[in-house]
Amino acid sequence: MCGRFALTATPEEVAEFLGLLETEGFPARFNIAPTQPILVVIAGDRQQPGSNLPERKALLVRWGFTPSWVKDPRDFPLLINARAETAIGKASFKAAMRHRRILIPASGFYEWHRPPKESGEPSQAYWIRPKNGGIVAFVGLMETWSSADGSEVDTGAILTTRANVRIADIHDRMPVVIKPEDFARWLDCKTQEPRDIADLMAPASDDYFEAIAVSDKVNKVANTGADLQAPVSVAARPAAKPKEPPADRQLSLF
Image (cartoon, rainbow, N blue to C red; front, side, top):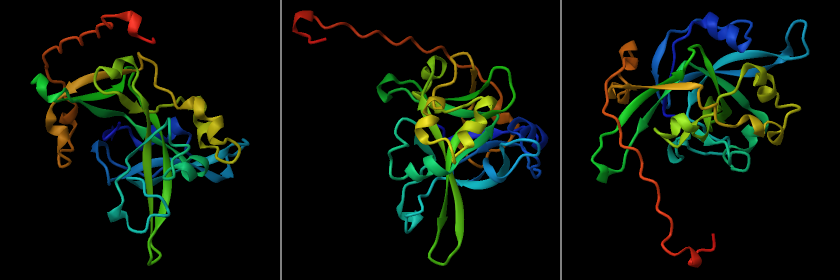
């Protein structure tokens, strides 16, 4: 899953990476949490100058997806993530998968290794970023929720997939990340149906990210400084024991 992330790149770097004509200034954010506003990119209505591709626009949405049919968000769970494997068929996400796909720029994300209680190991936070630095684009979904009084709230969720080999040692899920050459396909909700972009919702390559152990300061939303990403020393975790084969294979159907 993805419960915290950061965006510390400049507005100019974000605009260049995502092909935006312009974007308003924003500060570096080291601890973006659910229910807070997040920067997302959508396909605009006009075409890019000298291209048949639509312009891309940046806007802020609330991190926590609310389907349009929900009557009261207070009675609905906070959907910060959507499983890529099932979002196409889920009632909450089906319409957004078809009509409102977005990109979410990030410098990286945080994840926690939470061992079983009986192991006696403490939980450990990790800052997970591209090995080569720079910005990544998570894929996500957007929905505008309208209240009875006519007010509207734009909301969004990050799509997740199974973890790659590198991240699986920490957690079994990770955000879906796509390459710049695939941005247009993902954002094109007019000609690209969900089945057409299903191949993009795969784990990043095993060597794409690096994981850095950090302190538990990131657990508190009030902590927002760059020190959240300072490395800390941790004891090596014991390797998982391989499962033993059945004692009598003749009784196994597999």
